Image (tube, rainbow, N blue to C red):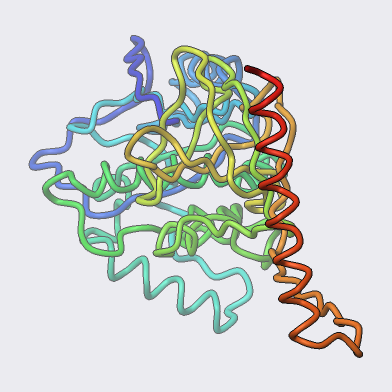
Length: 322
């Protein structure tokens, strides 16, 4: 679940740019502590070093894996430029590799003013180290939340199509966002452009099971359209398949009278009832052999004898009751 907050503390570096029209979305990490504490520590660091380092971001982003909540905190308004990049180090090659050249070209396409990239971007910074981001992107809930944040930021009137780039794309001599290591694999940018938000891998056999939902963000589910929600009260629900998303155990729920499909992490379900395992139904035909040597006349005679015996028994019973 994505939460949006704001904390425009006094003293955070920022610049009023005439006609500020951000075109791109620049992605960073803080290389500091994770979570809300990490965000607040980063804010205080910006305030304490405003006369020396003079740095800031528009948004601080963090992931709470226990609550299954992603929080985006605005600390510089969207109407002002943050100080997330050093213009003096922009577009300075480190390796002059083909990949570096392509990335420079992509950032040139996004920016309108290469001399001051901060004047053309909204900056978003993940609270933590590269390893923390690598762990977070394994969660389909976090990925869905970050894509939702990107979608909302893309709704700003001057943001262009395909606006994303990492800090390391423009400043590779000192940074390597959003790769897992200098020259390493991309952790986020390609994910922001992917259309498929999650893949549910079912597991055999198909199992139907009743559960109670956990209350609160821990029960954050994913709808087929990629949006998320959670249960504010505990409800009895039915799962119709088990499997995984990104290596995390999930259950596919058949929810409510409209039979809405919801993907729920196993950690959001409790008190499992007896499982019903689907089985293939087979029709068994049994062949009964009739003994030979019996004629139709014998069958008819036996049937007539049975009827005669039944009539006599009924008559005797009636006489005894008179």
